[in-house]
Amino acid sequence: MSIPYRTRRVLNRLGSVLLVLLLIFVITWLCWVIWLQRYVVYTDDGATLDFSRSSNEVSGEVATPMVASANIPIYYNEGANAINTSNELTQLNGYYITSEMFQNDLDNVLLQVARLDAGTPVMIDMKGPYGSFFYSSKLSDAVISQSTNISAVADLVSKLRTKGFYTIARISAFRDRSFGDTHVSSGLYMLSRAGLWMDQGGMYWLDPTNATATTWIASVVLELKEMGFDEVLLADFCFPNSDKYIFNGDKDAALQQAAATLMSSCGAENFTLSFCVDNAAFPLPEGRCRLYMEGVDAGSIQTKASQVTFDDPEIRLVFLSENGDTRYDQYGVLRSLYVAEEVEARKENQ
Image 1 (cartoon, rainbow, N blue to C red):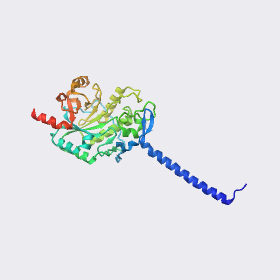
Image 2 (cartoon, rainbow, N blue to C red):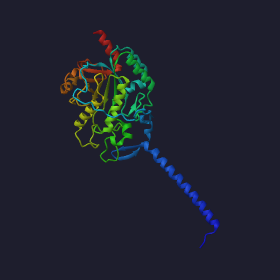
Image 3 (tube, rainbow, N blue to C red):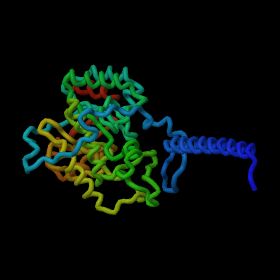
Image 4 (cartoon, rainbow, N blue to C red):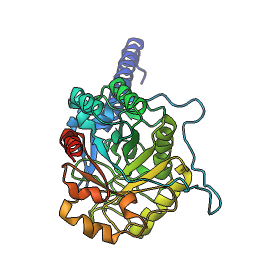
């Protein structure tokens, strides 16, 4: 049975139209799936869609990669005396500036900073747990904060350095949503292995034993060191307090090894790399470093100091405090800039 010529033409045209429609459908579907990826959130119950994610910090502008290399490798110093610690540390007594302060109250920050004496230790947030950078990083995986006036922060850092302050950059180490989102294999997985485990704040945590994670942290430290900071504090240098993620090794040993690796790659005689931990007995690595603790009330500082495993706790142990309680002055202390006026007035009256 033969099909008439006109019928064949109609069928050919119909087939062409259906083929075009199918192609359009496939392309549209693929675009839809790719667009949805930014809203996928992994929890203990599986994957869900969270359309509020578009307002999070991780949607910032990706920084321009460095010309020399997109990745900064870790180099290990050789020999017991590779890190010169002959330049002794001194006790800290200064202030810290959080990202919320310079994002929401910059004028007051500048006013309080102007009142401080030259040489005062001042710590400033330079990278938060979202993975957002508060400065113009050149690292290829850096995500610049959209809610921060980057040029204003740069001016603030310049003022700190020009006035001769001892400058400390604080960065979130293992709590990093952005890097975990783009480097899934470097993070801590949920028990179901459906994806990375997320804490109650919606943040991913990196695995301290993962070489990609420690290389990333080292690259940030080295960049801040190159910018002229005297010290970098690694906040969130711990495992999250939960049993909902996979990690089968020795957590204490993993953190100690990570600290030693970072100190080996970033330490120097004129630069301090410090660690903010929740365990006062954490053994510091060999090198020029300090141990920071936050959330410790003034009545418990002696107990914490008695637990440290290193010499000179009055110099190498630093408490982060929101108030001006004088009991912290027995050891290193950085207080909120918001209490600077009160503390400085007390010093003048002594």
